[in-house]
Amino acid sequence: MEQNKINITIDNRPVSVEPGTTVLDAAKSCGIEIPTLCHINLKGTCVNNHPASCRMCVVEVTGRRNLAPACATACTEGMEVHTNTMRVLNARRTVLELILSNHPHDCLVCPKSGNCELQDLARRLKIHESPYEGGEKSCHEVEKTVSIVRDMNKCILCRRCETMCNEVQTVGAIGARNRGFDTTIGPAFGMKLSESECTYCGQCVAVCPVGALTEMDNTGRLISDLANPDKTVVVQTAPAVRVAIGEEFGYPAGTIVTGKLASALRKLGFNYVFDTDFTADLTIMEEGSELLERLQRFLAGDKNVALPILTSCCPAWVNFFEHQFPDMLDLPSTARSPQQMFGSIAKTWWAEKMGIPREKLVVVSVMPCLAKKYESGRDEFKTDGNPDVDYSLSTRELAALIKEANIDFRSLEDSDFDKPLGESTGASVIFGATGGVMEAALRTAYELHTGKTLEKVDFTQVRGLEGVREATVDMDGFELKVGIAHGLGNARRMLEDIRSGKSTFHAIEIMACPGGCVGGGGQPLHHGNVEIIDARRKAVYEEDRNKPLRKSHENPYIKTLYEEFLGKPLSHKAHELLHTHYFNKSEEE
View 1 (cartoon, one colour):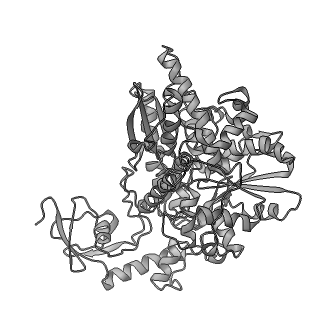
View 2 (view 1 turned 90 degrees about the vertical axis):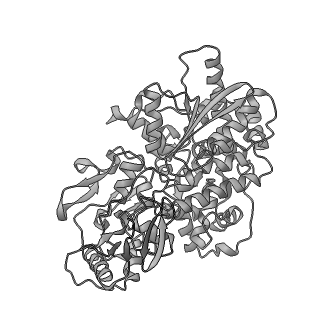
View 3 (view 1 turned 90 degrees about the horizontal axis):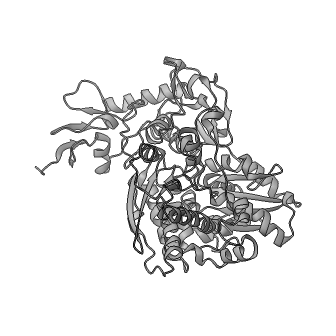
């Protein structure tokens, strides 16, 4: 017997596992697949996801009278498990038939068709009709927000979204209401999602197995704009998109397809194909300068300086602290996100250089994040009602449009982004992973603070997938303490430490989505699979290593932008175009 291991048999195969391992995970470790609906792989989030609400994963355990849900049953010494007996198969079919009896049969027009776990299970179990008459749900009104579409008629009550919102993200925007056949998942007291504390992070969408939660689709609007000869349509694409969109075309998770992505965007008809990485470099110039300015005041003895400074690139995170920590609105950097900086620069500096009237320029973003749809519509990012970024598409939406346009993505030749708003450094690429913004800021802040060349640019101490990380960086004699959190539940822990006076950090990076932007709610659906998120994260750092320039302040076009237009970081012009302010959402409610 292996020390500290539990020995069981699954389908007559001996398996040794760690104490506390579920039957589901034990089966997976030896290559036995047990179907699930309600279970999410939440490894690394410090949340135990054992709802056992769907009963699709039932197995037979010798000596146990009833069938056991594999996702919520811990292994015990000597346990004998059978995953494919006729009793088990009959139970699974019955459960699935009951779910299908109360589910709409509009698969042809459902946005999740072809990527629906319920559909896949029905196919796997060869269920083509249900013997039960439950009646399709049709009592719930479909809600369309700026980012998320809720169709509770399609909800199968798996509770995945509830787990993500309440336990992982700790937002608390949705939960179960009513009982029995009247049970539904949504905001309290029948409120709309747009009236709740929803941050639009999209993690509920990322784990929903059916079409109950999907993104607001802007592809129709884009097609109309691309077909309009009076419009100049430009696109910016986020760093996390290039390491994930390949999955929609059969590539393994984490495959870098940057060149093919640029080529596909040109074939769709965009007039100019740019890169959000350009303004990620610009963000570092502003946010890094803001960090140094606050630190200088702190070192000079200013006890009122707002520290730790918090990153502000993630709109779901911004929405979160505006709703839930309004007493700390002075801490986040005032720098806009790279998406919004891009829109502002494109519709001022670049449009003026090109002689394009603002009203004829359409700026579209491709983002891994559903909150970017919400962010682009915020009033502070509009000039006389004209938004800096007209609208945003998710990675999934772009992939669907490429397929609709009959573009053979895999056969495309690689091409580069257009200049000047397509030039970037390795520091900007790593914005896509948790810890990346902090590392990019450190590369620039170190050289600006010390005046010395940073020979080793890899700050590996801030990398990883642990929910909360911390590091101390030697800034030529000054010990800079930094923190990193991904997932809003982890962010809450850090913010509560700040509020209580326990925090000793000078700077903190926060990303709303597990893994950072690579795990965003608009990415190819991973259904909570951490291995996919990690593969994308590693690809981001690979792209960084292959860049000739790896520090944001070395980007030649960023230098030109400051020389020709902005003057210097934190100038009056820079504040006007590249910075923002925050709102107390709790007072608005």
